[in-house]
Image (cartoon, rainbow over the protein chains, first blue to last red):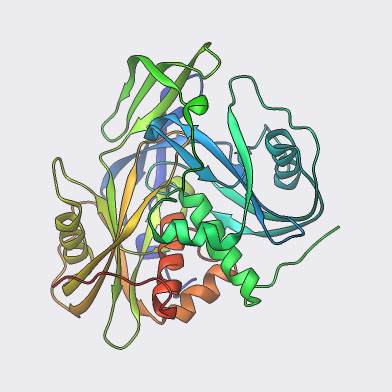
Length: 192
Length: 192
């Protein structure tokens, strides 16, 4: 959504410094030229990117997971998602994560779009896919991964969101897509 | 959205270690007891929390910002938002950020809910507020903050999201709320 010339807003990279190379998180601090010519610093997480999948069962229900999310100390209802392996195509990642975490494989896939979930301090992009023609199979969770899989009517998700019981931003973003796809106002390009 | 007993999913805190205390980002690594009794580590950003505001003009348009987001190297269309100061009430923060960034003050406010935007690696919660009865005034940007303010019809935002031109997850989550509030299916509790 451009409104014309944005050059007066752009910050330019001057230098990078590695702040943290953890077992999981990678954080850098860049020195940047601000729009007024002064310099500033920007600290952010370097993330490989991720994929989230909205799996639609033939009976109208969608597949979600219940997983304990340690940073917020609660069990979260969310659509299946996972990080891209190095160099991995997002669709391949979506198929892999859906199978590993839920056991489902899908006959048709559609790419909806993408989201950036923490633009103030992460370069993470999450690619959004829809899957249908689902077939149940055997899941293969990663070591140290614990989650429940359940199928729910979309109405139940929307009611939970309205009540404030569903707070995962990637799942809520997928629900904006789901609501408009189900209403027929946003059309997906399904591929076999 | 609970489905009964979640205790078999819970991870328990054992110990904490500070990994990074940057100028902006604070990262910790916790040792945790996993559901199967083994131990693991969880690295995540400690965040003070934030507020996002959906400002609704009397003519039906909403107020959005265009801001360069360095981590993803692009100018982003987003609803006004900002971090909580230490001990700050979310509503007070919302009023402050709306005024500072856009110059608008509002006669009525409604708390919609909250979202967690990076549950894999951040404890950030974003409180979602709607504002109406807007009055324009003078904005007061922070040092080093550069952003444009514009008013757009909601339909323009939904079309941009559908085309993939609007990717900020907090803004897309607010649009799920906005779509249902405008449709009358999700009702807000407005306070003067």
